[in-house]
Image (cartoon, rainbow, N blue to C red; front, top):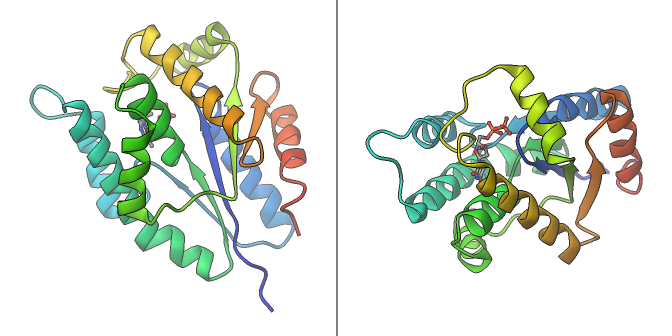
Length: 209
Ligand code: TYD
């Protein structure tokens, strides 16, 4: 009997170290003999990557909030149909850098569209697929901002929104995690990457074969 695939999503604000931790987790799982797919949102498939470019560098005057939420949901629907569900069906582990809870926190919370609208779009677009666990990386706002500045990359259309928007994103993530303590593991993102990685492995202990 094949071991069923597992779906892990990394969430958090900008500069939380999601990509690094997704990579470290994938390496640890592969060392245990598991087949792992690492992917990201918005993106992950050719169709979704094309939508990503539209979202992060909007042509014209920028998307109205509703259109932005629809584009994220459309990208996700393609990613789920063409990459995530097939990998899970093959018994693989899927590690995704951001998933629907980013839409709930950014568009639903900080963007003001509300959780019901985002959840409805996800139900329609991706049949409501949920990760087996969400790793929420959290840290002090100033420390995370410092990390981001050290990266020295130009901010995209969403990252470049005011501090107040990003504070609302962090608060929305916190509220989602508090409402679903089984589904979310809140992880302190500050400290050495290998220490954060150890916290993440511990939080996934019950899912590991
Ligand atoms: P990403 O490339 O993951 O940025 P970062 O490396 O900073 O985490 O995501 C791009 C931006 O898109 C980021 O600012 C978060 C935002 N986003 C949403 O607003 N809604 C979503 O559903 C997703 C997946 C991302």
